[in-house]
Image (tube, rainbow, N blue to C red; front, side):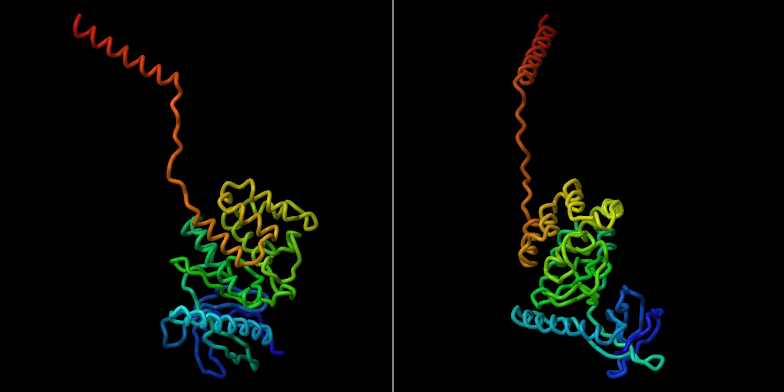
Length: 315
């Protein structure tokens, strides 16, 4: 089982593939986790940017490659059916020979943009609705293939200037029914004593709900997380935050169902989110009836004014 060091490579480093001989120039780190680091890269001689994941374990990385390959095959079928050009997820898989060992890596499509929390901070909280819808669609595609993303957090979600969404690190992906491989505390169902760490669609939906709370009400989430001991922390803490927050009010019903695990699956969750963000807003204002005493007073004042004018003219 091949393993690599956890060292991060600096911008300008060239990653040369052992088998395919492709060469990629590292621009910067996009994110890192327990099983590898994701870099923003450019292929030598090309202008396009890609995401290159360098793993710490060959078998772990191969598991991610298998997921991406399955996603790519399904997406290709769907694109063909809809008559649109196919855009592959996975571009290349290879090893990087360095210091007498081979470090596995794969290269995938990169959405030029920024991590989810940076995007919302820059563009505004009103973008949570449409970006959330696209993220739920990505999770649904994964669930349809029998996988759960697991480690859903802002750093693992890239968003383009136009709100296009891409997941960039599949290190936490696990098969439905297996234990969650990788997670981050805030977004973990077990952290809030709200359920098990067995992979199911509800696990990702719970993480998505906490992700929304983070984006819209981060300070309160921090306070809620820190004021309880691990054994006393519970889903009721999150539900209480959702119910009392004005910022979360437009999403409160959806968030409550996701935290409680009441959705039948991500398909239903996606449809409910779509209905929620496209719910018609009434533009008509309520008719306010003028009190009778105010109408009488106004009429008397007009009559009095007319009387004053009459006397001033004729007397």
